[in-house]
Length: 173
Image (cartoon, rainbow, N blue to C red; front, top):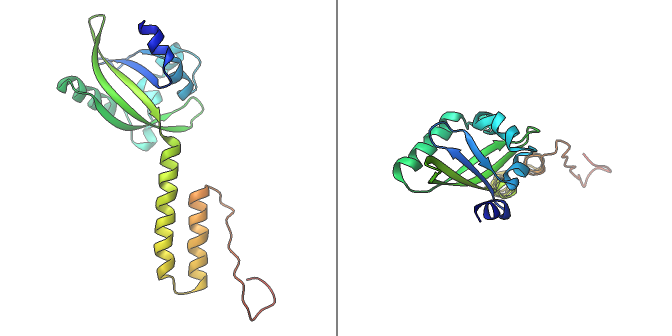
């Protein structure tokens, strides 16, 4: 029954040894999330290889979360950045819950991929900030600069451009 539930849910799940931070088990949804083919490959990476250290998520951070959860006996919800096998950063919301498995103190971590939601939230913030900046822009050039910077930030593309039409001229500026 445990294995059917573990593998049958859509959420990515890992079971981590609370003392060593060794990955005891991971379901297929987790393997898909991080892009690895097997539990052995995930274990080889360990928490060090799966955390996105560039975003500030280290083994020590993992240890702190696990320690808090185990010490309090209460689940904790954390936002975390994982790095996939191909180097892509995936933002996840993780519910970390203390448990005992075969006499071993572990935490069960249920991961929900929130990467797309974070991108949308970032885009909404950028658009709101741009709206405020455009209200204080004094010239068409300042407005164009805000538009180009915002379009670049929201789309992730570096080819954003804005042409200004000058009624006194015959072309675009």
